[in-house]
Each structure stands twice: as C-alpha cells, then as structure tokens.
Image 1 (cartoon, rainbow, N blue to C red):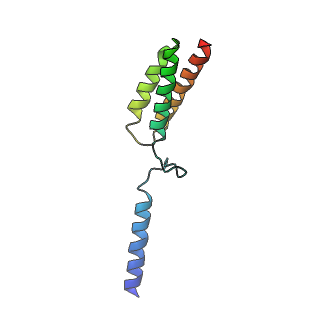
Image 2 (tube, rainbow, N blue to C red):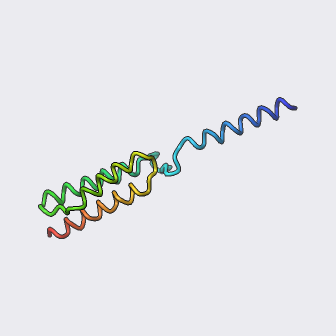
Image 3 (cartoon, helix red, strand yellow):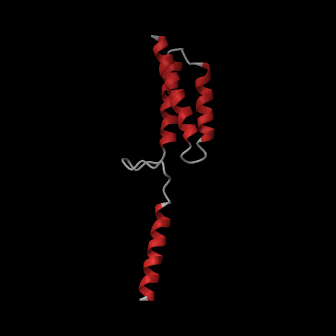
Amino acid sequence: MKKILLIATAVFSLSTYSADLLPSCHNWNDGSSDTVKAAIAAATAENKKAAKVGFEWRDTVKFIKKATKLSATPCNSSALTMANMAKAQALDAQKQAT
C-alpha cells in the first residue's frame, strides 16, 4: 500500500510540475505564446504603411523599440501595451494622411 501511495504522489507531483512549463499567457486557441511578438510585428507593419504615405509619427518607433526591449521577458504586459499603442498611433497616422 505504501508503494502505491508513493507512486501516486510522485505522479501527481510530476504532473503539476509539467503544467507550469507553459507561460500563463499561452494562447490555447492557436498554440502560440508569442502574442507580444505578433503585436510588435503588426505595429511595425502598420508603421511602415504610415511611413510610405509620409505621415509617420515621431513616437511610434520609440514605442516599438521599447516594446521590443521589454519583450525579452516572457508574457510582459507592458511590452504588449507598448506594441498596441504603437499600432494605434500608426493607424491614426494613416488616417491623418487621408
């Protein structure tokens, strides 16, 4: 009986350990945990469009650089916020151009 209890405890402890291997920001719908990188890529793409029409705003590149720097730590909400702000500015710059 002690062996069964010991094995059950070991299996349970290993299963709870392996559950923490994925970060808490892991997106279970598409299997991606790179939401920050995707947001930075989207902001960069929109900023390129704004620069193409000649209305790139001053702080947009600064926000993208800061988001990239903050993205070194996984699941950083500040990096995601900065990337979203940069994308919003790039979209507003495109609207201003029209």
